[in-house]
Image (cartoon, rainbow, N blue to C red; front, side):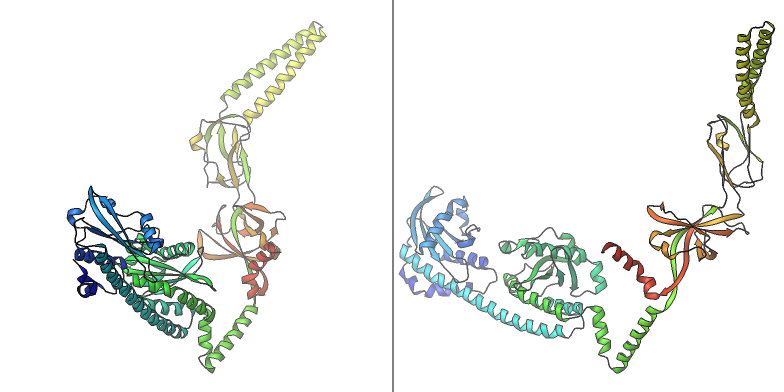
Length: 606
């Protein structure tokens, strides 16, 4: 191969099919290296990117017979940097895989792209000389420059088209009634422009970004299909301040940040790849994020699409900020739409406003909600009078008993034995006292008398226990507690609760008035209540007393109020629970509904 290559005729004929406006520059360079190696008959051709891309994976052309020990063919970063810095070609004799090779290195700079170092290896006996290689390399570099220029031109045309699109988007979104509706239109148009499956737009920051619109999906669908996952991916991109991608794509790995695993999100939308772009403007700051999803069967994201997304990013951020400031939220948008609907609708709105204000000022009875519980008016607890064993229980909870009716019997065998022993001992002490009196022994008389008195007290104590072995009801009523049938023969201690008896003719309703509402409640106010056991019936009574001190009920401070209940039908039973309403004074509707919030704010913000 000689100087006939310098006229470039054959080279240009070879290169023309290769100079395509390819979105992937590495793919173009790979094809270029293969054609260049085949044309020159080189042992190997390596294209390395310099500048910020020095550590990038080299692009190889190596015949199959020589693909052994690939690393030995690669010039060092220092050698590449020196050639690129000098801007001149370099030649050296090197040993690769045990064989001598002539290595020629040629630098090339293309505006707007990373600099290239083209390295070719030739066998020592090759006919290609240094000057021939440099001539071919210079002509080849023109092909690379032509490709880059055409690609930039094509990208510029697309950017121009994109600017036209953004102007058109402003006009389209300007006709929307609300902020969310304008973002929905924007998402639909961007889906068409980027030719992807879906476009989602969210607003907010890295802490609270909310998805506002998803193309091709209604508001209800958006809530049920991956909204939380989309919002999480958007917050991640905003926090990093960079465009993120999942799953990774080799040709874009140096330009994009790999996102956290988003497989669940992709599954929710039936997508294969997602690109999330933070919407940030130099003057307006972060406005939110945009997520683009591609279908599973789609090819890789083209580099040109990525560049278009990056170029569009500040313009879209400004557009979202403009819409946020100019478009009302849903309620205001609906109100404005009605107001602009003509005189009849304006009159209807005015009448509605007057009715609303009048309704809020209309006085109604303030009803204080509270929990309630049915309790007996009188309750008696029967406890064990002394230590013994329970011999027999005659009643169980729910039984109606009369006054002095036998409730239970205690075992008296030990008591009777002890009583007999005490009586015998007392008789012996008295006899001993009498003998001492006959013998005129005062000290013995006194000692015997003291012993007799002690035994007399013991006899009285045992006699009392013997007389109270039968436990009787102190009043007529119903046994509320005391199921001792299974406890017969079990020891009981003095003071142990055995039964609880209360009359059911007179009951009271205990109303737990909340601490914040007690100042609106007074004795004499009407109370309506429903019990859990009969929720379909509403009953009435009136408050009789209000306790002056608060109590803690289920972790809340309440004031207990009491209201009498007539139990003529026998329906009420102690322990029934329900909900009550205390009918307080009349207040405006607005006060009734909002005074709780107002008082809370006054308490916390004073």
